[in-house]
Length: 158
Image (cartoon, rainbow, N blue to C red):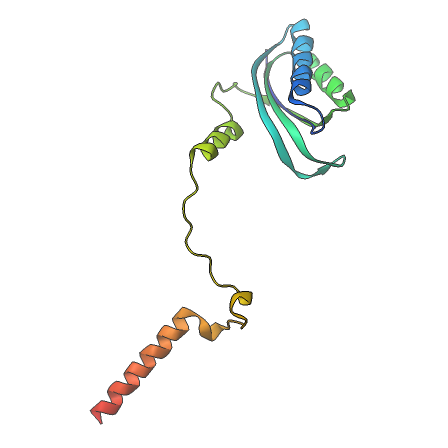
C-alpha cells in the first residue's frame, strides 16, 4: 500500500486529550478500511504563522499512514467536516522515517542547551541623550587618530 504523511492543526481551545481522540478516530477509520497508522507524533501547542479562523495557536499532530488512496480521501473528508481542525495536509511519501521529526528533535535541543552570555548591551540612541552619527563609528575614530600621528611625524621631520 502507498505511504502518506498527514500533518493536522487543531484549534488551541481544545485540550491535548481531545486532539488524541481526533487522532484515535482517524486511526480507527483507517484500520477499519484495511490501513494502518505507522507513526504518530504530537508536536504540541505552537504559534501559527498567521491567524486562521481567529486562532493564533494550534495543536500540531503528524501521522505516518499506510493506506489506500480512497481511505485517505475519506479521512480528508472527515477532517474537513471536523470544526476543531483548522488545517491539514497529506503528502504521499516513499518511506516513513522512524526517527523523530525535526520539530521534536529541535525542541529537545532547546531545553538541553543553556543560553550563553551574549555580551554587554550596546548603547542605543536614547541611552546617552545624543545621536551617534557616522563620525562616531570606531573605524572613523581610528582613521582620525592615524592621521594625527602621521601629521606629527611630518612636523618633526621638518
